[in-house]
Length: 214
Image (cartoon, rainbow, N blue to C red; front, side):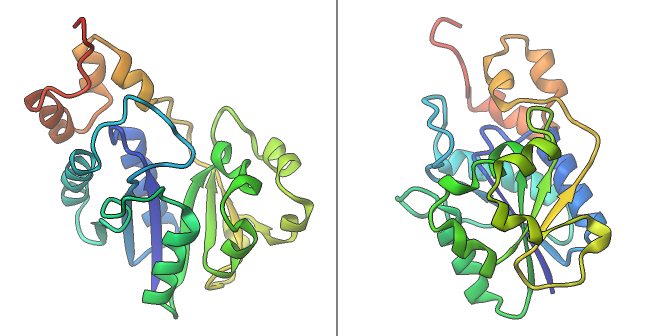
């Protein structure tokens, strides 16, 4: 089985996330892709993060529309602790010992790999699909990650079906959508244009992300 894991704050989940999930599912011929909303992200300490339960509900709406093969995991949402990647990968490797597992991350986040908890052990648990972001090119990424990881790096065509241990550089058209900008924009039409319809309606109905002076 090929299992994709796409974790994130998803505050809120937007069309950039949806497009990435769909492209990875297709191009890597995944059997399942789990969207994993974080409880408390170690990378984003944002006072504007709404409750894990509400973010989970929005991601669930998206997974239902994406269709067969897309699911939402409540593993991190149900934990009161910081959502460390190591803990999540260890759980899914234990649950699926024979699977090819792929953890999805952007170049901007993966460039900080040395700050991740137990980062050296992660490559014995999963492969990593590292997606281009405009803020960190692949060349810059290679200059920032430890040299010891370079031998793990391959292009998608060079992946040979390993269960774990590979860093796959995956390039797709840049999608310039930011969750922060969506939250900050007062223009509802802008927000609606960058959110799945069901998510937009959920935000509007529940009066989420409203500024105090709005």
